[in-house]
Length: 360
Image 1 (cartoon, rainbow, N blue to C red):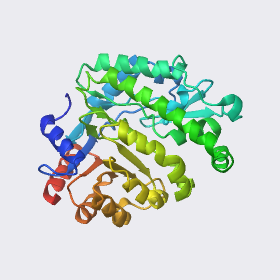
Image 2: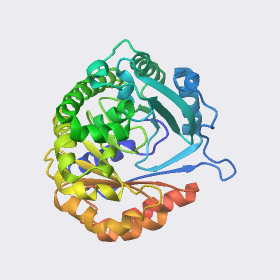
Image 3: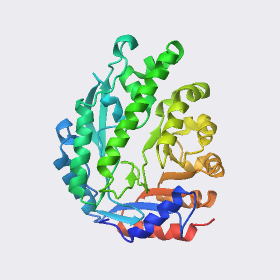
């Protein structure tokens, strides 16, 4: 793989990480601008649907980013196949997705509610729909252009309940949990089948370029086989009972479906669901996110320690000053984090610090 140093060793570290083990140190992915005078290029706030669905534009923009980025530790060039979060909502007949102005490296989307009445608007997969066809077209184009030099990510098709909330409306779906329980469960089964189809189709397109490996677009994490991010961001609004009723069935099925399942743990409110998540025997990795306005992951060491005790590997996105207290509080086995540095020198120093602090 281009742009990286000693990628073969990083592959072995990632394999150990997925097994809850450690090779010579824990995994750490650090990126930095190559020049202090030139900040990392990204997207502006002016991108439109035409940009995000134009494979040539997407590839050139990411190539520019890679060429101006220093990849340290286990970081690698990860080209996002990015048409918005919970993208499989757009694979449903009559779904209406709007591409909004993005920021940084993110594609922002918004869905007009299309499920007004469950009897007439019940979700139906539309393989001929615009977004599904564009996802497959982009996957084919980006894989062909990458030529094995960079990894092309899986799309951000995560969270069946989150996708339903896009189509139905969050408030309406939460009311349906009470008034239309069986209907919501049936809709969840449809979204699961759509998710499985999309994951399978994209993986088949990308696997030769990626040499059978996978990555999640916004996460600096590599897996040696089929991996896709799982999530239920809606869970911050629901009780443990509702989480077990509506979210756990899809998570069990997705853990069975994937070789390397990873759950995106979105903020401190999800701690009330932690025991349910830890009961998923096949779940390998939990990625903790401290959302804007919430304390550092350092403040949640007991929860992170519980994850490790249950045999789950942990992936964190950290600031440089958070590295030492996190590494002191956790085992380095099954630990991986990504860091954005301000310079090449800082990036190399971070990797050396991780080497020094890694321990059983």
